Image (cartoon, rainbow, N blue to C red; front, side, top):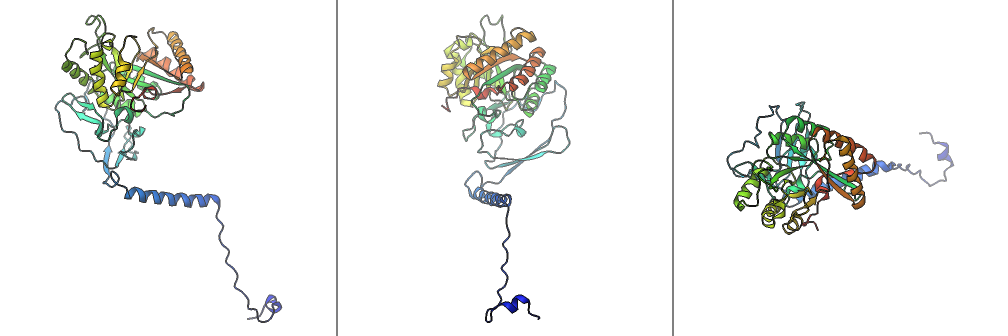
Length: 388
């Protein structure tokens, strides 16, 4: 081998050293990616070694699109007639394959963690079997064995910020098929929807409402003054009825569908002023983990004290927005609601699923968001005795 000029110039006795290998240089982004991957591996290992429920095998649940049916056709939830044992529920994570209602087959796979409180909006239309008690009239909401409440699990997520918040509850859904469809389709997902127990196909409409992001509650008919001349409808709870009769009527209303956070009164000026009747009513809601919204139509209601006593998340409506069914008047009420919210931090408005109400609320909510108002579900503005 012919020596190079550098070899000739090197002093005798000094052998040439092998060239040092250059270490590769990593960019900051590459380092972050490697660190993140290592964190995922460590977390996965930790989960695998945790105690129950994560050591249990996953339960696979496959859902299919809702079949189109006539408005009068009862759903499986509505037609349940015989009591049955609660379905066995795995306390491990569930792998849920959710197919879209359009039948395209392009669904999503969701891993449900049973230790989580809330419900993923993509599966909000699916009842949590751990929160259902079967009855002769249908599924009843109940607290889970792990302490979770329907009031928490079925609540729509919100920002949690303490800015100006407005909750709007639109009731009477299920009574008119066209009106129900319009309300679900046109109202923003932040608007809470209340279903009338006398309605038709409530289970089907519940699923549609939950698919589009709405939090829902059930309306329960309570005795007004001048009853029965003024009649809220079938299975009204009354002051003079026995405890057994009122519980039977309440449970009938509660069993009309699932996936709701609580109950709102329909009428009930006389009933809500009676401590004994309301005590029984709210004790049942507390046992089942449901919230109660008093529409605020009577100042004589004893609900606030009894809700606190029975551990029931509770709220009172500030304004009935559509006592006058005129778009201009409804918008004025909504502006008043905004003023109330700016003064005390939040406000609750109630209305019915009239066409004019739905149109006005949808337009107002869009503009209110631009003014910095957060439209929240009713569960976001309750006073919760269990949370302090």
